[in-house]
Amino acid sequence: MRLCRFPDQRIGLVDGEHVRDVTAALASLSAQRYPFPAHDVFIENLPGLRAVIADAAQSAPALPLDEVRLQSPVANAGKVVAAPVNYKKHLDEARADAEIHHQNRIAEIQNVGLFLKATSSIVGPADGIAVRHPDRRTDHEIELAAIIGRRADRVSRKDALDHVAGYCIGFDITVRGPEERSLRKSIDSYTVLGPWLVTADEIGNPSGLDLHLSVNGETRQKANTRDLLIDVPALIEWASSYYTLMPGDVLLTGTPEGVGPIRPGDVLDATIEKIGHMRVAVRAA
Image (tube, rainbow, N blue to C red; front, top):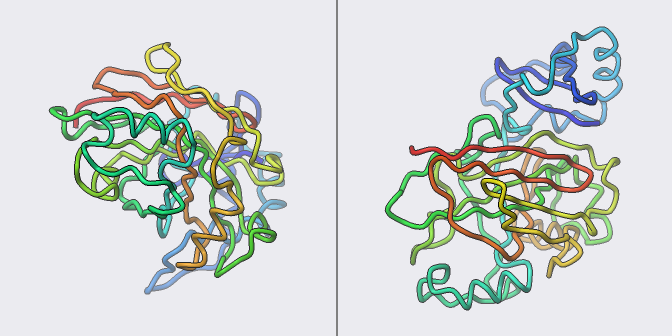
């Protein structure tokens, strides 16, 4: 199942080159009162909603996919957990390029650990990337994003994938500089998620997925998730040993080699095998 979000809080089921508006399925969710949950209630209830969504799709209007403004498939992420330098070749390029490391010591992920990004940085592909510090180098980073589907507290690697609702393409946009990663990567619009959430059953093992990113038609990043230093199940095990992961939490699994600068006017085209393609425009903030 491929599920998207689009304006006016609508939910869509992607069906080939069309989107079926299945927003009516949200009526099956329990009404919430203050204090509202700090996690994504739709994703939490997705297993029970799948049949309702399928039924709603039977009579739902078919909207042309290329006319739908795709937003982040996650409406209410509680946190974004990110894995730095999780591909060996990216670790090597970060250490070799002074414009990337800025005299910071680039340590192995096993030593530097994970980091958090502000949820206010999340946008969808239609929103685009707004460069806030044009005087500094701003880089693209394509990543496989795993969306947590149910509460994960100190889960084992063996059971980790049972806690994943689905996957999407992620951009972890970053301003290069000496500051901590969390600051430089938490700028508004610097976490792009999309184009939709593909449920975990359609992906199976998230290792072995091809990734490709081009900027203005030029290939910049091309890799496969089999080359992750720490794979998705191990990342979930590690993250959940420090904090409980909740439905809607986003795990950015790391970017491969080939990171490079982007500028207003650029267009990014990203593809991940079994997920799809998303196009994102860059503009000035």
